[in-house]
Image (cartoon, rainbow, N blue to C red):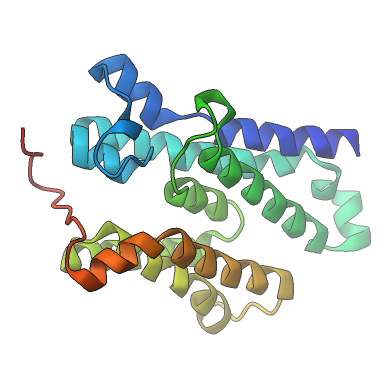
Length: 216
């Protein structure tokens, strides 16, 4: 039990690494949370500082989420004897707990005054360690919607909504906690993007063009 708690805490601490804040302050002398959408994430970093800053922020956020969930491999739930006795269900459940811990760390980072981002990239990295096939389809969905619409928010919400759909109808998963988890992800992404939804409806949401330089 102590090891399990420590792993959850470690997942939260990994999620708390504020890559956008640290890179903005270290190399550009600004707090990204005071500019643009005031969100400490890759999208706002791209909007304010450009691709050179946004790419490492995105990479770190995805990797920290993935690393947080792979901590499950040193838990008792991943041992061959435990799986032989109880199946893989407990391991999947624990991975889901680690996802939650990592994403909460990104949104409320202890290393940055509990003011973080929306956690989309961290969530993607975390879920990639839970069920990779569906996440890869979601990534393809994200890129297609982004290339067509140029709205990161719309792309993120669409990819999130498609996750449980891909899980059930493409990969025919029947494990209920995984399906419920996917539905919760979809709902939370919509909730956290409610301001973006209002701007999308009003036609005032900012667009992102990956091949253009940010305006000076």
